[in-house]
Amino acid sequence: MHVRMLTGGLAAACVVSLSLTGGQAVAAAPRVAEAPLAARVLTYDASGSAEFRSAVNRGAAIWNESVDAVELRPVAAGQRANIRVLADNGWPRALPTTLGNGTVYIGRQAVDQGYDTIRISSHELGHILGLPDRKPGPCSSLMSGSTAGTSCTNPYPNAAEKAEVEGNFAGALAERAPAGRAGVIVD
Figure (tube, rainbow, N blue to C red):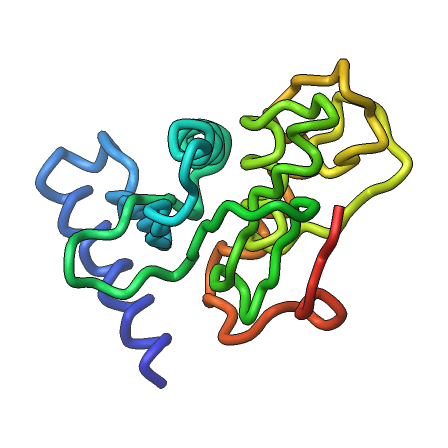
């Protein structure tokens, strides 16, 4: 019933427009502008990332340049972060708790073996954004991780990885991590 009344109202508006312009249609019905969806903001705390802090900030910036549906920002003083980033002596890994939340470890073991710190940061943040490892894989795939070798320094997600993150955060925001992605992800 409501739809019919709305349609009738639009029809009446068109008739009024036609009568005011001498029977000639001069403009289409006004379009409703679609407001862009705001990015989901996730905060990260890199205060425990030691010597890797600039690499973590660059990894977050790369994701911000690459996707629209989510934005990574440093946490403000006194706030709780969605993502904690820590340095340790092990292998890099992510422990996602829910989509967009968790802990990232920038492990010195991989850095000591020659892996690029910015690629490691981007890759591990990719896990928190809902991406799984894709091993083995080429250097063009950020989520191929260590299988691309130490000569690979590409810190950028490819088109498929970007699209997956956009899908993870577009529309209704997920309350928990996609099935099979929660837990420790060791690279």
